[in-house]
Image (cartoon, rainbow, N blue to C red; front, side, top):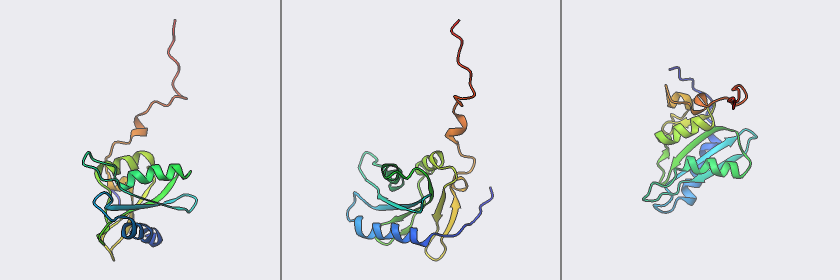
Length: 145
């Protein structure tokens, strides 16, 4: 595994931190996420905690981005409420992010030591769903005779 550190998008970190400070005011919403779309927009979201295992902020962000027409995300960061700072995505979110955006960059690390890494570096030797799908253009239809 080769981890390459890239530029940290501090505006993105501040956007997520702002949402965590101003919108995460109960046990139902404890995490915020922000992503930079390929067109430069910043999309934000919060988690929806529920005892049945409600979605993480990163997953809510994917739906929010799609609803806003942002189908390509470049960089993502998650921030916890109560000034917990940057929190890395959980394993489930890492897998979903890898499947949706295999070139995604994720900001991780503690304050003062933030760094940007590839989602593939966060899930080494991971299962890539797209790699295991049949390419419908290359497969020939089954013969009915």
